[in-house]
Image (tube, rainbow, N blue to C red; front, side):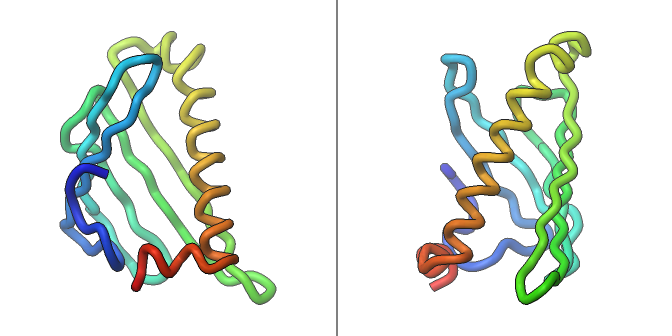
Length: 116
């Protein structure tokens, strides 16, 4: 993260800029929280970055003493074939790794780093 709230929870209207290396190149992506229904869901949408479109819905629901988290991720570039053949799998893996990191933090003490 290169800008945005670094502690606590995001709120409606917050913008966050991320920087990461994808396919050997450094990329920046700025998203804004455009929908927020705490504690059930929020949506972030790209406002600046390398994609033509990016929407990411996060939803949470209580299940058997825990929480089920669900992601719906929509993206597009100017090249639909590239999206299907390469980016879809890349983003799926990226979200799976991110969600595993979140699960470990939530089930251990790691969450304190973000909320305290």
